[in-house]
Image (cartoon, rainbow, N blue to C red; front, side):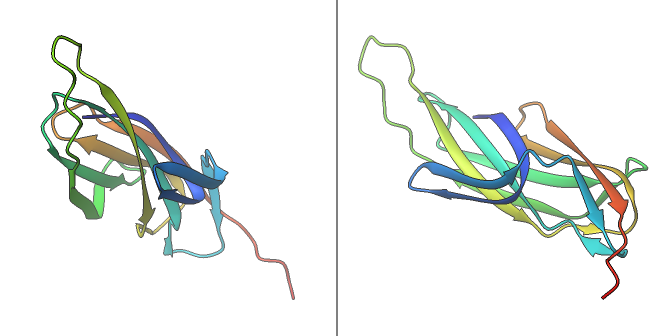
Length: 138
């Protein structure tokens, strides 16, 4: 299994093998004060071949502007039993949508990164610029 696509959104949900995304492809967010929560959804499309193992390990990490990993790391096991291919045919490929709400703490403005990895496959890295914003007087 590997990550085919990864993106950040204001909100996302995977339901009945469909993806519902609101405010997708976020690359920049403003926060009125620090520390703050990132408060975004991570959208993943996982690609699975029918000959892949039925269980795989997923890890999501936040990296601060200095390159240091920030706790918590989100870890989980994904278990999907792929349909076996018909004899004599090549392995089938399935696309599996997955969304996660990110509870990551952000302690300062800067260029942050979210690293997503499945087992030993290469990491998928998303950058997010976090900047301060002023709240309107009210």
